[in-house]
Amino acid sequence: MIQPMPMRTAHSSPPDILIVDDSPSTLQLLSEVFKKEGYSTRAALSGRLALQSLRTTIPDLVLLDITMPDISGYDICKAMKADEILKDVPVIFISGHSRNTDVVRGFSVGGVDFVVKPFEITEVVARVKTHLELRRQQRALQKSYAELRSLEEMRDNLVHMIVHDLRNPLWSANIHLEQIQGLADTTLHPRIREHVHEALTATHTLMEMINSILDVNRMEAGLIPLKPEPCDLVLLIQDTLQAAFPLIKSRRLTIESEAESVVVNADIILIRRVIHNLLSNAISFTSETGGEIHFGISRNAGFVRVTIQDNGQGIPAEYHQKIFEKFYQMHSAQSGGRHSTGLGLTFCKLAAEAHGGKIGVQSEETKGSLFWFDLPEYGPTAPHPSESA
Image 1: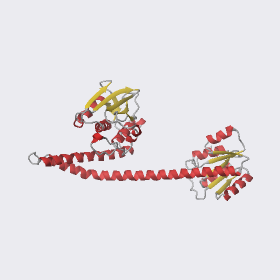
Image 2 (image 1 turned 120 degrees about the vertical axis):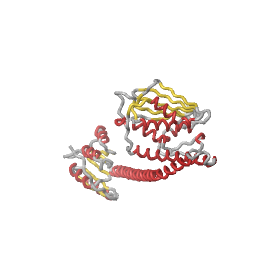
Image 3 (image 1 turned 120 degrees about the horizontal axis):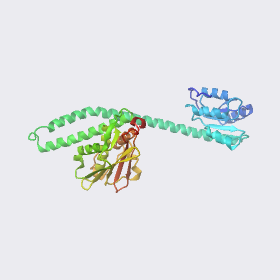
């Protein structure tokens, strides 16, 4: 059995080609051809020598004969694809076997191309150039992706640091404003009381934004462990809506459940926030007068589905996935220019998935929206959240 190869030092330009064939004349011919093309070449007369060469330096491409006296080209290619360092190196098979089964097997073990002997030199050179260019583009994409991930990580770390440092002075300002608001009505002029109230509202909003950013970052890093317990969704929704009653104002709110009690296995604090966030979203997209919000609870195949439907302006289909992305914001005429972090729905998605559930939306522009999320139903057959996350 061929063992995976250990770490090797990286190659340098010009492109390096490893040619593996048990025919010295074929090795010499191909080596001379590719040296004239400006490539660096190495030759191996056996599978064992090929593996030794691969352990020394990572090539840009391998030209590999199939039939050799010790190790077949198929086994060498399989060993390369099982190696984390070599798995992306393109392998072009060169063989006197031209049966369809040989070609298919070559591709099945990871080869990118197949050249049949006797071959035309110009054809081999053209195929090699094509796959070297594809390899170059692949590396460029990998580098760009790594750089992008690094920039995103730096951005997230910067955001986390800033909002974390903002929380303490903002909390202090909030306390002082509450103390001022607590003064006797006769002490403060009505205009001052109004200004203090507006300032308190702004600080509460900022605290919610800061907590959302920190919580989403912590959930993405797996730093908020779930504390699942039996939870009656009907009661939890009723309690959450009662606490948010001042925000609902004149909107018509209804709840429909297929049973008086529907129990799930969930972290009550997290799911309460999911319900609150989805309710706040529905409020933002419905008018204060004439707005309708309907909660539904139903069971299906071991899961419980909660739906939140509104008669607001609706969401175009092209935004159905984007609205769950971090920092993405949808604006509505009813929101009155309110600002948000664009993290409320992201939090809902992370929380639902952490429980082993899902979340989604069904909506059409001008026809309202229906958000839904699924949670495992409580019971002996229900999947444990830690197993499904």
